[in-house]
Image 1: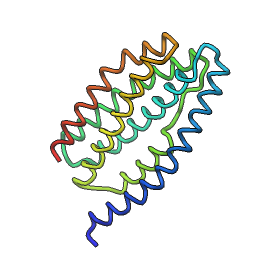
Image 2 (image 1 turned 30 degrees about the horizontal axis):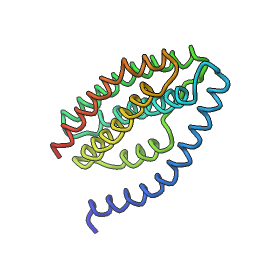
Image 3 (image 1 turned 45 degrees about the vertical axis):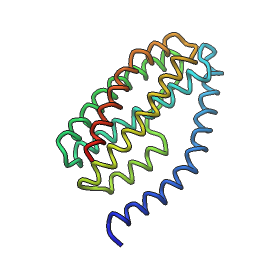
Image 4 (image 1 turned 90 degrees about the vertical axis):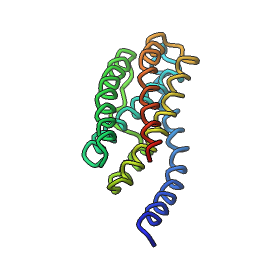
Length: 185
């Protein structure tokens, strides 16, 4: 069995496991967000869920970017990764401050789904690493754009919505950059 076929098989098996974990993890995040919204009456579940989801995703972007800065083979992928670390660190710090102002404990790490993907990616090398990293960036930034748009449309806290409005153009730019890189593979 070729290395690429073995890697594809391993990723498919892992994807099935991740999919099973995702629904329970999303449920756990929703329960945590609802509890935080209840403890902080000024925040709706939508607002608390946004802070939790985006906070954990931001931590993931930084860790994936740090990994890609050392393991990516293409200069443009390493440059993209450096920008992800910089931009998501800045936004993450701002989100953590906002969460604390709203009497929420901000997430301090990535979610289990991203941890599993990180573990898989860290075992990948060469041009395959670049391709898998960028594919993940397209998928993650697509989901994050949707989360930001949902907060803008359905959130109720003016400060949380303002954060989403401020950072949505940057996230959309990241998605476009990732798509351009993906087209090169």
